[in-house]
Image (cartoon, rainbow, N blue to C red; front, side, top):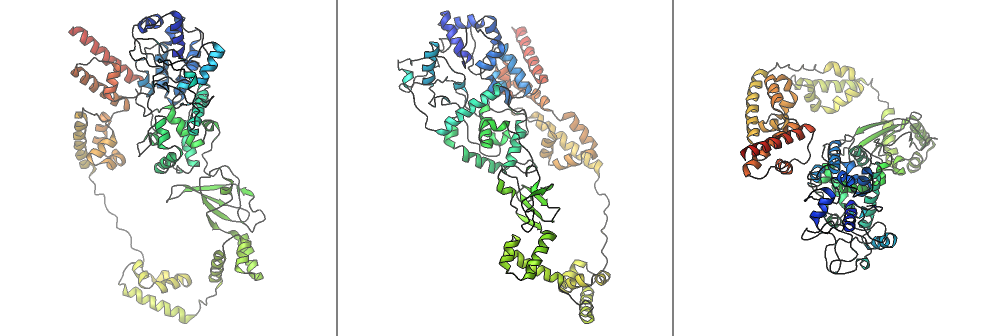
Length: 621
């Protein structure tokens, strides 16, 4: 059976079923797969190799998977382990756990089991090929309108609300692309142009992303790119701490609640929403539609992820000198920027210093691709000698404060403050005035005696004016007159670490027994978890090398993620056997609460447990 452009596999099977003259599901499955029962998935079908061997499909394995399934759309957003497992199951497996392994089953995105069609695409297909078929792009998550004809995709008849693809009794075979609904209503006449621009835009962007996925053009370091882009938008600090509340607020401004409900995505709310969790450092995979929404929020279009992005908050130098009195004003001659983190906002703050004129300024980043930001500053740290010389010359000429401020590129108050500081520095105080000096010395000596041997801070507070004058104009005498600083008292070690080691080891042992007894919802045994349970988390994290017993006890009992999953599997197998239900792989994983099997070791352990249970049952019979 030859394929059509953008035809999804289930459509091809439906046409092959019609050509073969088969009308019942069992007979179709027996001919195509050599099985009487099998679930055939629309997005991630299985047993593709069997279809090729039986000559049901007239194309290569690679072409079938990449051009006639939705697998390319999911592949870039999964781990290497998931990709290898799902690929193998799609080619040779029965498909029983594909959606479980991919995380689709546990995703917050609602799965739509109805096939969708475009009435205008249907008319074009009939005119060109003599028959209509289900298109792959129309089945993509989030695509509710046809990107080509800009009309609403149909999953039900708009007149009688009859489903166009789901067979109610399950006895029929694969759903053939209809031209009329079951009640005889013409689907080609049910053309409804889309009104919601955002739905149309999303459909186009999802389709574009699908094409990029098929060409393997999606970057491997997506999370790293997300963080870099968030920094550019001011939603991530220089230390990679994401401003979750502001992020969610701005995301919901871009995508309304009504829009998210339409495409089957819940609103991100709280610290553990899908949006917050996506940007954390963990190994979980997320639905491609969620990635699409995040990419659109960050870049505006999916092709934005292909553009080079820098993690430098102020871009690449050189940067301009903003000294308005200099001949090189606004010229990019500053070669280096010093970056530090703001204590208040957490945003990066850049210090820029011109080596030619000494002008130094700072501003808060990151830059948001705005040229005006580059030629602005938040604070001047040093005006530099050239600026001061120019202002001094203008003051000597006798101009007004306002005119001098305009020429210097500052506010009038800055010039007034500069004049006052200059006068203080140039003020000549006769420090040889014996009477003034003697009077202040005597008054301060009286304060020292009155303190009765108190510390310097007490003396200073008792006579601040004389202290300030002497500190500025008679500092050598002041240093001799003040009492010497007291040396701090050194305390001997007061912690008996051997005793503490034994006490905490007993507490850890009790905590381990408590965690291992917990069978309803097992908890992974980690140093952090034990520390929280016994109230000694800080000691275990900072001083574990001093606690030899505790260190050995933790080393023997702390679980890796693989060990934790194996313990959960063991508990799940026991529960299922106790309940009398058949032991199936999917049931064990569901009972254990495992969405993704972390390694081949866990996979082998699970298979071993299932094999042991099967042997036990066969002997019992």
